[in-house]
Image (cartoon, rainbow, N blue to C red; front, side, top):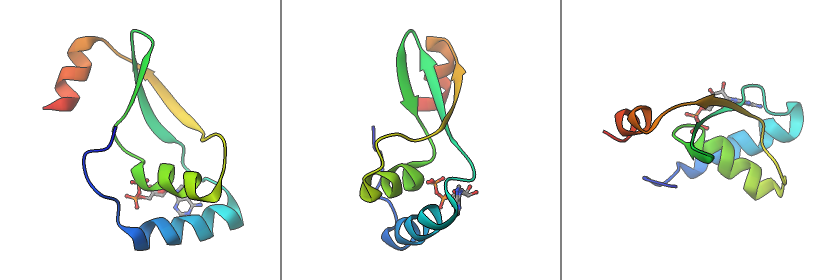
Length: 73
Ligand code: ADP
C-alpha cells in the first residue's frame, strides 16, 4: 500500500547504509484480522526491495478495524 512517492535520495542513502550496517530500526506494521498494513518505513521498505533482500524486519502491532480507521484518517 503506497500513498505517496518516496524520496529517491533518501532511498539511495538508506540502501548504502543498510548494505553497510543493516537495518537499525525495524519498520512498524499493523495487523488487523490477519492482514498486515504498513504506515511508515516506506523508504526502508523500498531500499530493501532495491537491494533484493527477500525480507524486512518489522515490529508488528495487533489492532482492530477501529485502530485501522484511525490510521487511515
Ligand atoms: P522511512 O520512510 O523508511 O521511515 P525515513 O527517511 O523517514 O524513511 O527514515 C529513515 C529511518 O530509517 C530512520 O528512522 C532511521 O532510524 C531508520 N534506519 C534504520 N536502519 C537504518 C540504517 N541502516 N541507516 C539509516 N537509517 C536507518
